[in-house]
Length: 294
Ligand code: ADP
Ligand code: MG
Image 1: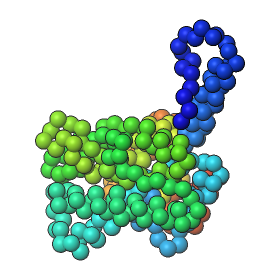
Image 2 (image 1 turned 45 degrees about the horizontal axis):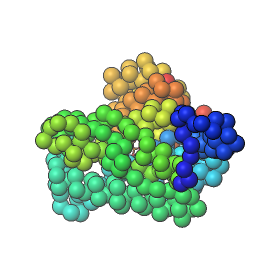
Image 3 (image 1 turned 90 degrees about the horizontal axis):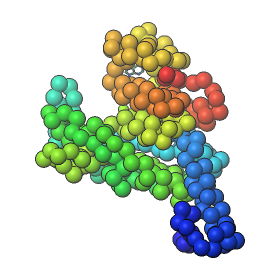
Image 4 (image 1 turned 120 degrees about the vertical axis):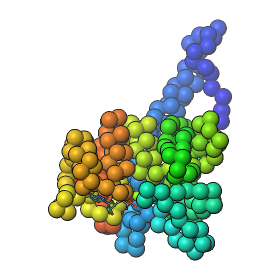
């Protein structure tokens, strides 16, 4: 990098042509960086949506080529379960929720930030995109605390540092983020890796960027009502009502919470069917698909 004059320091050669030139170039670099994070789109891809027929990765590459800068967050629960099974790590449950003990966590880290993350990066690049895979642990991006001692190494995200993501964007790559965080509490698990919910991570990142769009690609049409009909638009109040009455449950709950968190920071948030071809392009060109939350 070339050195640049600090515009805030006094300079006896006030208003020299050199200074003006360097100030102009600094501000244009800053402007270029700003532009890269303006209109940010955060896309969460579910483990289940990456089937043989969807065009999610093609759509992401097309977005990148058009100059939009998607930030991708992925899950991987299904692959983790398969690995646990084949390696004989028996899942343990407390109140119906999976416990992440140390042997399970090794698999979570290996699968999320290794197998799933690098496969996505390789596929995006094979399609002509430029991608860089990082986890929430990299560069201290995601800070968390243990959510519930009984559930082991599962984290609640307490802070997001967007600088590692910006660094990847500024370098011209699509960030592909695996949902891991580092325990920043003063508890005995301090500095351990924690497994965090990918939906929550997508919501926190969208909120931290004030992202223009947050899109969840999942394996259903959108949020369904008690008669299994698609709900095109949900207010916060309606969303909370559906969660309270258990019409919205399981994997749909963290998506809705994440949408509400991002909407409160100005995002437009949608949950759409990632199995449909070209759904991402359609959503971004204004098509009213799936469910808009907030
Ligand atoms: P992903 O891999 O996209 O995170 P999840 O399985 O975690 O997928 O979440 C989506 C699932 O949420 C749906 O397949 C469905 O089983 C469940 N779900 C619970 N309540 C609802 C609802 N009201 N509408 C749609 N899906 C719901
Ligand atoms: Mg899920």
